[in-house]
Every structure is written in C-alpha cells, then in structure tokens.
Length: 356
Image (tube, rainbow, N blue to C red):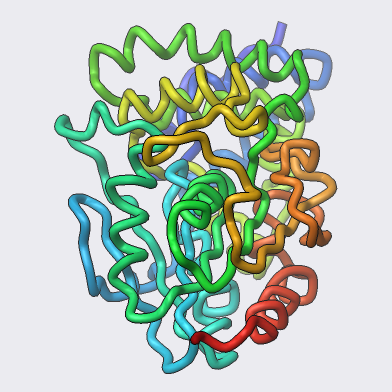
C-alpha cells in the first residue's frame, strides 16, 4: 500500500489541482506499484504549490455586455474576428502570455480580434442551457458588429459558434477542436461521463450550478496516468526555466474556471453527450434543429490527432478539415502552435471574401 504524506492536504491552497483529494486517490490507484513515481509526483505538486507566479496578463478591455457576458476588445483596424471560448476553464487560454496569445498575435497580423468572456453565472442563470447561451448571449453580441465578424470557436465554444453561424450572418467560421458528433467519444467514455453526471446531478440541482471541481475530475479520468506523469516530470524541471514557467501558466489556467449553470450541465451531459443531438440533427437552437449545412459562410475546422479531450472522431465534419497540432491545449499554446494553427488560421481569414 502506498502511504500518502500526512500533510499532503496542506498543499491545497490557491494553486493546485482541483479537487486535490481525487489527485491523491489517482496516485493510490494508478501508481501503487511505483513508490518512486508517487514521491516524484508529490514533490512536483509541492513545487507547483510554492512556485512564484508571474504577473498575469492584463485582461482585454470590455466594450460591450450582455447580462454577465462581456465582449473584450484586443484592438486593431482590420476585419473583426470574434473568438468564442468554452465555458469550461477561463477564456484566457486564447490570451495566455505575451508569447502565447493567439488573439494578440492575430491583431499584429492586421485583424481586429474580439473575445467572448462568459463571466461567472449567478442564481438567475441556473436555467440557461447550452442552446440558451447561443440565443441569449452569442447571437445578440454578434448583431452588435457593424459588419459580419469571422467566428473562431475553441472547444465547446466551437460547438456554440457552429450553432451561431447557422443562425446569423457571419463572414466565416473556424472551429478549433470543437465537438459535434458526440458518439465519437465511444461507448465506454460516454458511459463514464453518464456515470459522472449521475453523481454530480443532485448537487447541481441543489446549487443551481455544476461545480468546476466536478468537471475537472472528469478530465483527469480521461487520462489519469498522464496527469500523474506531468507532475512527476515537473519535479525534475529547473524552476527558473521557461518549461517550468509554461507548466505553471497552463496548470493554473486548467485548475481555474467558473461553475456552469445547472441547465447547461444537464443539456451538455444528457442531450449532447448521451443522446448526440447535434450529431443526429436533433439539437434545437432558436426554435429549430441546427445542422452545419445551415451555415452558408466559408468554414474550416482544425483537429488535433492526439486530442484526448475532444477526439478527432467528434469533430463537426466540415469539408475543409486541417491538422491543427498534437493535443487539445498544445494546438493553441504549444511550441508549434504558431506554425500548425496560428498561421494557417490567419491565412484562411485573410483569404475570405471582402465584406459586401
């Protein structure tokens, strides 16, 4: 039996895996035969907890609001490009650091990027489901642009952007690691997510919110071995190295995030994941079923072959499909992101027809 250090729970402070008890349980179940791996992972966790943090990027200024949702402006004089992030984890993954900001890089290429910030839901938001976020927030904000913007949706934000592009006038749609055919997760993974939701649902109903800790647990369970290995590897890094700073940035981002409205979680797990309503043409947005064919604007999707969060098999299936990197997060902020995603995306946007 592997004995976890008695003071391990004291590591839970402002920084660290959420929820920490699950991380410790994974150590027991996944590394029981490797005491050395357990010790290295625990040391990596300790170093991560006490590491000095860089000053975070200043948030982009807010120009418009719709309820709790804010529209942030990166500036620029070119074509408007509206980024739609997932509601799971903060939108800052698209503006992570000075050298890892897709949004600011695109601004320097002559475009005018904007970023949806979904904000933190309150009690009045508990009944706003996935489709409701398109209808009540995304479509009205798109309508505020004097010319149709290009939509760029990342992860679940790409699912929302796809629906919005089918219900509004946009100049183009780019989906990055966006799920649509949820059967692509496979029966085993979908059964695990159904079990996860069964455990979460009573608490979600009581609170009116899906706690982020519950969602984090699901992500870890997709690949617990990798979760342990990355903390063990962090123990071996020079804390002053760029690799260590990059790890801290990404892990701090991954361990943050607002809760989801209860109705959002219910529709996500029951209608999208379990029933695959988008993939079967049964997902209703703004009063009727939505399909990718209803988007008449030019469209492209970027898919990562080794994505464990949104497997390639779940992609929308747009006719212009491109390789965007090796992993779900790495394709956006990894060392090869500029060559594999940023530049191809910029080239695609630049080639779009001029607004009429």
